[in-house]
Length: 177
DNA sequence: GATAAGATGTTA
DNA sequence: AACATCTTATCA
Image (cartoon, rainbow, N blue to C red; front, top):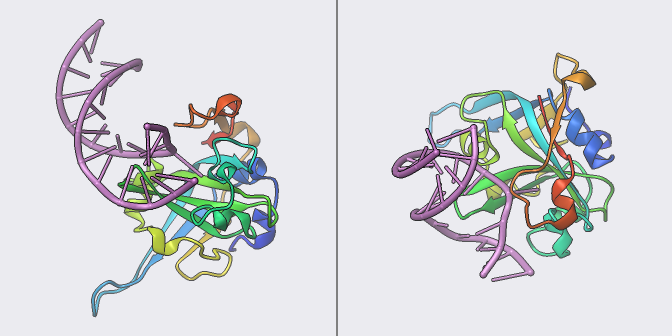
């Protein structure tokens, strides 16, 4: 079953943990004539929570801009941005409209998906998939996993690469299996 | 294992 | 100028 708006319209740290073990589904349309479309399904293994304007590690802390505006909208939308000039990162917007937060998908359990930049490469996720309603899209969505994840299976750590974020850099908002 | 550098373009 | 990354190289 596909996860709905209600699932994402909640506390970001909670959603980040509950996304572990869920199935990310990506339908890649055919690129050339006669070539079949491809569907990739993979378990989410690692996430990070980025919580609103106060969180200095969250892009939305810089205010509403062309880049961050998706996060200010309703939950359940994709936020895709370019990082370091070479990679894309995939996030899902959480919380109610006006509370700009998102969960970064850092790793899946498939080949070449052990990092936020790599999994976007593997799943052919780029800026075109920014601002997509993943509760309705037929290109990208998330489904319930078969397996129920127990709280004891979830490991926590500091978020990666956010040393500039002052007191927010030490928050244990990275979750992984 | 830890650390450093380089590739690269968007962002404010 | 800094950056929510990854790969390769060079240490220990």
